[in-house]
Length: 435
Image (tube, rainbow, N blue to C red):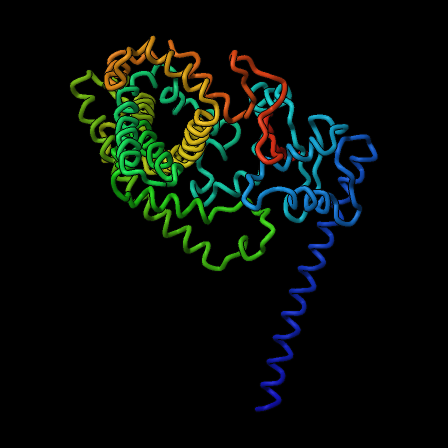
């Protein structure tokens, strides 16, 4: 009996050792291939930071990261590399394997335009990995080729400028609630986290635009939004330095639970909108395009029914279409709210730093919207095109992401806005050179 137990232990130990050795061999071979690719590119004259044959650019990145705040956005890293080694130019390779595969970093607007608009190239694999827990790979950011084109055309009408103008009254209503909350906190003298308020504002607006649903995040907790935010905290690119962060044993279960919570909320919303469209078709002479719909999901359903007229007579919405539509809704809710809320926070911050800009902004509002600020919301709701007559306001919202310094005359200077030595004045894209 004892010898049998010893034999089992030996067998288990041998198996585990074999697995570890095999994994190490695969790891070393992959590392050799990645480093060799980078070395060959460098020999051919392609731009990149100083390269170590053994560690690639890991030490270079570590030195730069040591001078940045711990919670700095990863996008700053590429910009800091460009500034540290200006001789590389705006396009260079980065070898940071095993954290990420050999990467081509593009900081040239002209080249970015070619990559993203003039030529439809395959998406960066890490983006698909990152978004998979949210949309299961069935979203327009992860899709490629004809599939991407089909769904992009399906949702495009929902984001056209003319259509968004019809949604302005809803956006104004949510923004008015936000302003009332700010006024309430100001009256009480509260110190608060502005990002929380702007996150909730952006989520309410996007929920209305995308689902025609009143999420009401500004006043109460919403289970779908809570699940989405939890999911975001557990999403990873696969390039994180902490292995436990990448391979957390609970991650798959948390992803499934959050997905269930989100789908349980969005699925009935899609079903309800589909039923509205199907019943409305009878009074609109079977032309779904004539149904007065506002939200993105409404326009997508209208396009779906126009392409599939028999669907209105069937028992329900096609399950494949419904699954992809739900995933697209989650993507829209995810992708828009953080960038919007961060921009609002930064705009408010800059207006406190540059009071002359705030004065100019107020003067423009008084001129176009009238001197009574309490009536501004009503005027915009009644005539949404008034916002097209606010060029300085529009510029104030567009400039912060580029962080360019603006003079009191309103002209851009060549010097970029810097905060604690961190500059971000250019768009940056990262691509897999093998694809």
